[in-house]
Amino acid sequence: MVLRSAARPELWKRAPVLTVSALLLGLVMMLHAEIPNRFGSIGSLVETFLPWFGLFVPVLAAGALWRRSAAAVTALVLPVTVWLSLFGGLLGDKSGAGGEFTMASHNVGAENPDPAGTARDLAASGVDVLALEEITAQDREVYEKGLAREYPYHTVQGTVGLWSKLPLSGTRPVDIATDYGPLADTKPADVTMAGNRALRTTVATEKGPLVVYVTHLGSVRLNPRAGFWTDSRDRNAWALGEALAADRSERIALLGDLNGTVDDRALAGITSQLHSVQEAAGNGFGFTWPAKFPVARIDQILVRGVEPTGSWTLPATGSDHLPVAAGVSW
Image (cartoon, rainbow, N blue to C red; front, side):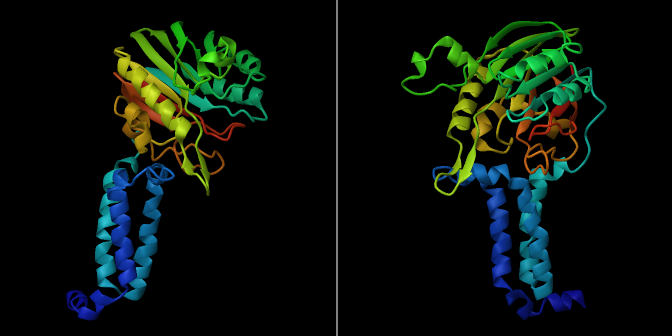
């Protein structure tokens, strides 16, 4: 009876708009890397919110069933298949219980109304190393005081810092082209350092050195005139990718606010060299921003030379980002 009904010609002619919409949805997700970035970085915008495109599937399915359109129902096979191929692996819980070495990263927020409370919450996480981004000059002492008991070793380079239970060595700022333009070289060293947004250091673990990068890539903006403005973020990402490519260390971890998801082609220079702990050992999508209703994971922990054993988000603090944490072994 069902096959006989589906064979009726009129059912295949109904709701052509729904059929075309389903096919276009599937093609957008399948060919997202081909969407040009030349005008308003549309490609990066689509890739930032790519998982959410799956919400159109039940809407189109409801319309197809209501209109009794066999063509629209059949066309939905494409977006469902593409979405599952892209994100199906994130639906299960792959997160284990910590690991031999644990780490966390948090954009603490320049406008954080309670930095002392944030420091207490982060200290209670118990991770081995803790990376902070967007540290302001006025709040730096608050974090140093609040984290000193749990983390005897720390470094702050400009607006980013790392707190550690284990000794650090070889710490230095990393040039990610934050100061850009003809006047960049004329800025005094103290001014340049105050705005530094990336560092590299080495943690002395029981199983050997682990190189840790902490970074906060440039912000992105969405507005009617410029579209999805990503110029500083993209420039920083390219420079950081170059620094990683030149680093021959066996084990590397990158922690920070990348202002982009791992699907964003602008971060390809980074994600082609390091792997997301969330994708390898996380539970779900692990969205981190905005903290009150997270819609994207822009805070990342990426690794090379170690095995992710778990990935999770920590409870909200006074920041507009959620902290992220991970466990690794080697």
